[in-house]
Length: 342
Image (cartoon, rainbow, N blue to C red; front, side, top):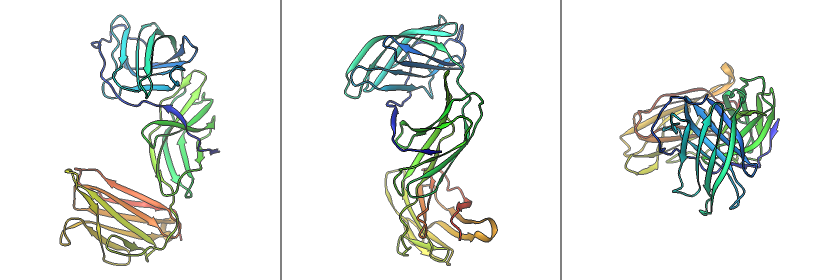
């Protein structure tokens, strides 16, 4: 199926916040998603994991209403022994705070919200009941297929979903771009921008609710094909077809572009701080006769943040490799880097 890129704001607020009451697992409600409605008939959801609240969401119409969610990744919101909870914050904009009480497999209480302009809506009541959403998909992969489209594939782990949600997480929020039918395991997302890196997750939905998210994947769309021109910062490898560039950043904020030195038609190295101080080496090999792929290998003698960009000048396909700040450069042995043979 094809996913049209018309993003719908999904979660306008994405953070983890500390909570107020001391932890107690005595009498904790069953784990799962509690979904219900506010007094205005709008969706409210609370996720309970290991007897604590891991996320809560509420939709509201006042103040140019939004669908706001809080995620408690590092410090889950505790549930008191009597089933009561108080989660969230009212100190920032946007914000969401929800208080209430669990009783068996249901919850009720009130919530307050602020939009980006700090317009407040308070004291909205809600009720919610434990639901049984489908299992989350897994093993999500993403492959760029053009300058404006990527292909997603995943493992379907449920047999009771009504659909799958394709969700763009590129900007740090969550935006629905489309849905895929039940019992499918792939989708194509179109109308993207060339040479841009996107991130996606997928979830499963049914009438009972929504699963957790799959793993997140990132993929870079093809750029506009251009000949590779070797220079001080550019290597042209594998017969001049593949353009290799690097950039670096130190822990004290200094940054720059790597200087390129060719060794053979397939290999070269980069220096960052001085031309006698080699930081990383790279080679790009044509393995089309072996596994119908172009291979990219690289090794580093550094622990600074490094971004290496490899571009196929014939197709515009792009692969980006990153070494995080403070980590020893890990070898890159990508034997499926480019499916752009010959």
